[in-house]
Amino acid sequence: MNLMLTTQAEPLTLIRLKALAHDLRYEIVCLLAQRELCVCELEVLLEGGQSKVSYHLNILKEAGIVGVEQRGKNSFYRLERQTLYTLGGELLKDVLHRFDALELTHQDNSMCYDKSRDANSNPLYPQQRP
Image (cartoon, rainbow, N blue to C red; front, side, top):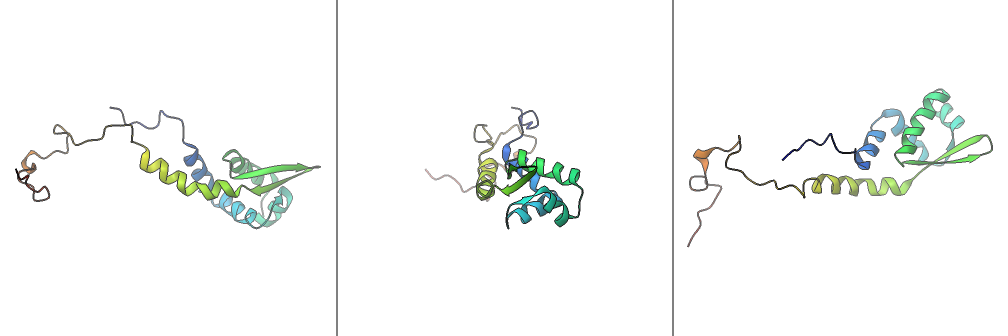
């Protein structure tokens, strides 16, 4: 049984959490929670350059956290609220059901198994009655 998780594609929930974990991107999300904003407004509010703001907006867009609409020469960004509403539930589902398909059971030959503390001598395991 191989528990290496790095060989699997990164779950969308993890991608979204990583996107939100950066201070500037979190600030962008907070600003977009108030109203949609164009890149130039975000530059002023965040006191950052266009390339820096656009870089972080692109990460949020790829994660599905923000949406964008082109209006003339300006790009207007909005918060994809449904994504944030469901993120907590997706996280719980991913964490709680990650290993459902694996058979993770107690094994007597495990490195962690202490043979001196078996079911007959461990007070945490009540004796079976006939």
